[in-house]
Length: 79
Image (cartoon, rainbow, N blue to C red; front, side, top):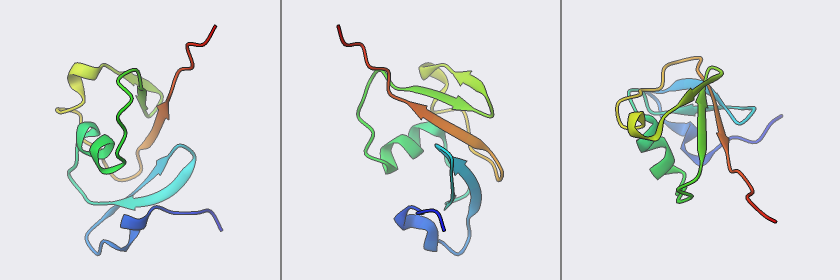
């Protein structure tokens, strides 16, 4: 069984795939809210929803729906 996040006990929730893991989250939350829930502070993070790049200025207006596949990518700009 794959590990799930702590907020999976929400009774009114939707199921998504987040970085390859099925998890349940509260309904009607935006990408911006999801990033806050996850304490994701990387300003360079790349977000894909169902295989499509989400521009950072759209995080607050892009809402997550049941069945969505969300990928959070932290680019490593090392040298």
